[in-house]
Length: 192
Image (tube, rainbow, N blue to C red; front, top):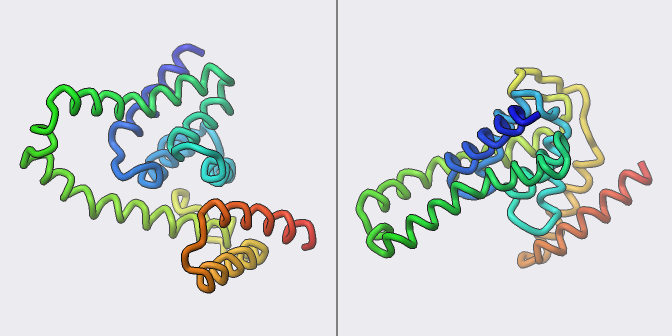
């Protein structure tokens, strides 16, 4: 068990260290490392994304906690959560130690400029993948399975209502959208 926890720690440490742009940019790497290694299946991974979005806190920390808890209980949750936040903590310590000189360095500025397109691409990739998986649950990009015969019309109804709300009221609170999504999910899945 300890070797498995150490492996899980290393996986989440890498995820925390090599993804920039926040939690959404971490999702493709998390999927590759966690689903690809068989810790959880793809449907549970997508469910964890939804749960992580609905609970307070950063999505990456929530995902790490849920995955660690799912596999190894409280100890697993502590290990994965610590691993995913440790790289950021170390970076903050380095910045605090070297102060403003570090942030104003040409090397650091150029690195962040170069990372912006990659982060935008990763976030777009996650949005597209989640949309496709929400509407066509039997499509798996990593396994190259493209089954368009199963279409989830319930999720499409929820998506259309949410887009209509956003179109009518442009500055809708994200909290309201989350609550509305949960309510619509309960209603649509109960009735159909």
